[in-house]
Amino acid sequence: MGIAVVGSIGLDTIQTPAGRVHEVLGGSAAYFSLAARHFMPVSVVAVVGDDFPREARALLDQPDVDLGGLEVQEGKTFRWEGVYSDDMNTRATIRTELNVFERFDPQLAQRTRSLRNVFLANIDPVLQRGVLEQLDRPRLVLADTMNYWIRNKRDELMETLKRVRILIINEEEAREVTGEALTHKAARAILSLGPETVVIKQGEHGAFLQGPEVFFTCPAYPIETVIDPTGAGDSFAGGFVGALARMTRVNDHNLRRAVVYGCVLASFAVEGFGVSGLAHANRDAILARAEAIADMTRFSLSDTARILR
Amino acid sequence: MGIAVVGSIGLDTIQTPAGRVHEVLGGSAAYFSLAARHFMPVSVVAVVGDDFPREARALLDQPDVDLGGLEVQEGKTFRWEGVYSDDMNTRATIRTELNVFERFDPQLAQRTRSLRNVFLANIDPVLQRGVLEQLDRPRLVLADTMNYWIRNKRDELMETLKRVRILIINEEEAREVTGEALTHKAARAILSLGPETVVIKQGEHGAFLQGPEVFFTCPAYPIETVIDPTGAGDSFAGGFVGALARMTRVNDHNLRRAVVYGCVLASFAVEGFGVSGLAHANRDAILARAEAIADMTRFSLSDTARILR
Image (cartoon, rainbow over all chains, first blue to last red; front, side, top):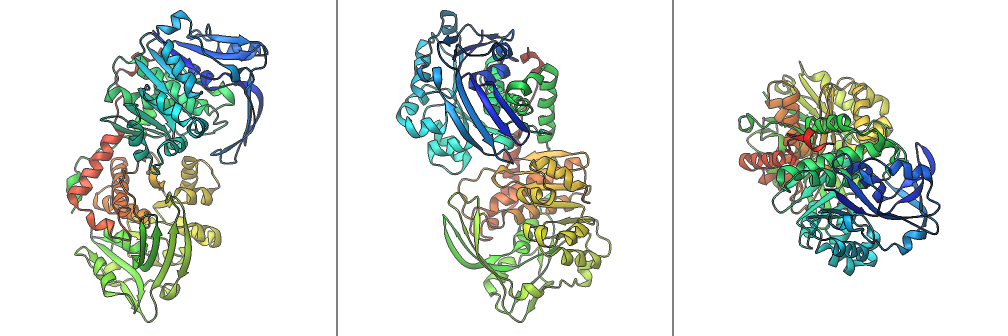
């Protein structure tokens, strides 16, 4: 029982109004794993170079994170450098060095092939499909993507989407995939591309989920001090996929709860540089934030008819 | 029993991706009144010129809207022209003609002075305070403002805010008033300026409310086709203030419900040009949308502890 995640592991250099860090552990598979492990064991399928620092590996090497599928190739690890705007709502990429990630061709070990849950993080849609083909009998197939693939590998992405059960995607990307300006209409349009459910991440406005018979919105947990937004989306995915995979059935009740856990894990991620914020997530803290979101959103319409004329 | 609203009434020329209308009824007091009247009678305090068309007046002249305080002055009515961007998230003002609104000096009739509820729509904060001074014993004082007053009459605005119980403001304006980038921190900063509660309007992302002991978020009702965003904020205020004024007590439960009604009335407003969308709001339709928002936001954390490791 567990979740396979296929994505990037890299070294990020990040500048935000809160400061700057140099070559810290990053990548979608890193954030995802460190968020999802609170719910279910995670098997990482990724590649790093032979320069990948021991300290970075140690951050990933948690009891519930299986690094058996973290391939070490000769060469340099994937590197990314970005600078966030003052309000942290936008970021500029200063530098992307794919390095060994450029030749990434995920090969799943036998014990990973039998996993029933898989998260295909933002990588080439051809590789995403290649991973699916290696799985024996996937039950819960979830994926993310980004504007690069939407623009440059649209046909391949469409093929992959046909085999994805739940797509987790940013608001802007949902608009770009579908051409719909209204986010909830973009969500419905995505359902016609294959996925039975879509989750749209809205940053500081939270997330919403559209399924065949469920439409659910959840606010972001209100953070006191945002230090670094990097990885918030992948941490959301980790919380969402982890919680959903752990719950037996994919139904209305569980999908809604899973979105709440996604928002909770994203909130920890932004409280520190790199993955350091996620280190403060633990059972009690996660539960407390989920309860806080419940309190922020509850209301009752009792007596309502009486107040209308 | 009723609500006094002081604001603008004008003729708007509006262009959106859905089309264009010429000199239709507009202004904050128009949208507010046509939204709030579903909960409580509204007395309009505003000014128009002697060119104000009979058809525009007829749209306002509803059983629950008292136009006794709608002054007709010699001269031209306030006019505004704006063009919305393709995604309707931004608009450019092409033309603003204050006309008789430039000399607006609200004088309340005796029966209006005794009203306990007042909404000070977005006008000069000096005039807002002048209206407050004319009220005998105001119970529920709510106000809106905009970036123009924040930038150009900041000190006067701060004086007014000391006497406002609930401020209803846009997200960008909340940031501008306080200098806080995070919306929920801007909300808390506003509470230190005088208001006991603040409601922050977030457009397609809904609204949230911060009071001394309540923090509540509500999503926007998902509209199929947005025709014209003009007046959404004032319609939100109409729904919020109308519902809250109608309910006896200003408490956690009622503040939350009032935000929901604000979101519901805003959703009608954007479905047609000018005030035409609000014409489709009626008791049953309002209740149905409030119930839909309840369904969109509900979740249960039952069994939650079990899914965390």
